[in-house]
Image 1 (cartoon, helix red, strand yellow):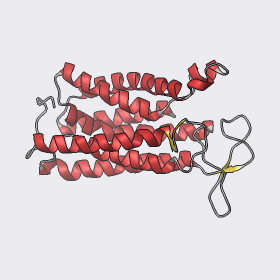
Image 2 (tube, one colour):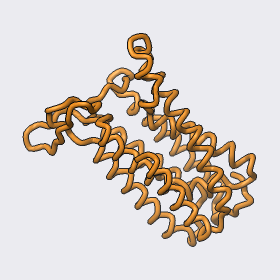
Image 3 (cartoon, one colour):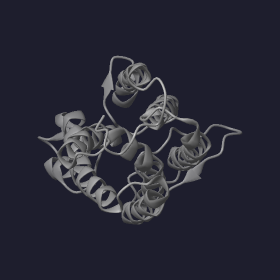
Image 4 (cartoon, one colour):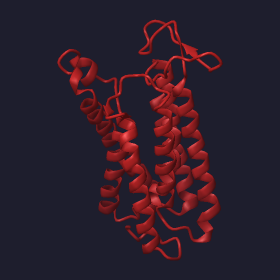
Length: 245
C-alpha cells in the first residue's frame, strides 16, 4: 500500500506540474530524494521512541517494520528545502504542488496499517464502530477495536482534497507561496493530535501526551511561524519559479 501511495503521489504531482508551470523533472527529483530520506527519518524516530525495546526485541525495532510518520514528515520536508536550494527552484511553490500528493500517499499508507493491524485503536465500547483483527496481525485478536487506521486514511484523503481546492481556487488570485504547507501542517497536526486519543498501540509518550501529540504542538507553532514569515515576504503576488524562497 505504501508503494501504491508513492506511485499515486508521483503520477498526481507530475500531472499537476505542467498546469502549475513547474518542471516535472524537478518534481521527480524532490519526490525521490525526500521520500528516501523521509523513510530514513521515520525509522530513526521510531528507534528513538522504541529505544527501550532494543535490548529485548532488536529486530522488531531495527527491522523493516515500524516507522513514525512525523519523522518522515520533518526530515523529508527539511531535505526538500535543501534540494530546492541546490536545484535553484522555489521551495514554496514546489512544496505547495507536492503536499496534496503527499497526503494521498499517506492515505494509502494508512490502509497498509489497517492490513497489517498496526496503529490500532482502543477497544470499542457499546455503540462504537469496531473492527476485529485475526490472529497474526500486530493488533490484539478477537476483540473489537476502533479502526483508527481507517479514520486516519479518510482524514489524509480529505486533507488532499481540501489542499487541491485551496490550490485551484487561490492560485490565480495571487496566493502567497507556501500557504499550502501551512494548511497541511495545521490540518494534519490537529487531526493527528485528536486521533491519538483513540489509539491504543505502544507508541511512546511525553508526560500525559503521546509522542505524536507532543510533536504536533510544535508543528502547529512552526506552521504559524511559516505563515507569518511568508506573509511578510510576499505582500502581493504569487512569486515566480526563479524565486528560491
